[in-house]
Image (cartoon, rainbow, N blue to C red):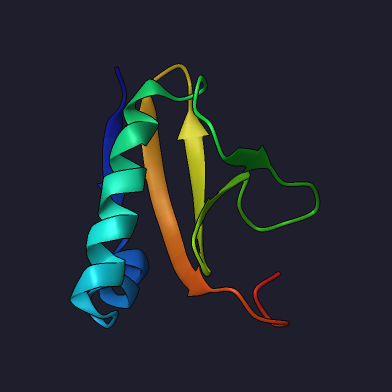
Length: 84
C-alpha cells in the first residue's frame, strides 16, 4: 500500500474547485494506494511529472516512488489546450 501526499500547489488547486469535482478527484486519487496496478494512469514522456490520472475534465499529475511507496500529487488541472 502506498501513502498519498498532496503538494502545496495541488492542495491549493483542489480547494478552488467546486465541491462535487473535488470529491470526485479525491475519490479517484484514493485509488492510487494500489499504484502501479491502477486503471486510468498513464506514464508521461517529456513532461515535468511522470504520471497522469484522468478524472472527467481534470488531469491529476503526480510522481510515484516505488521504493518508498509514495504517491506525490503535484498538480490538478482542468483539461484544455494548455494542460500539457
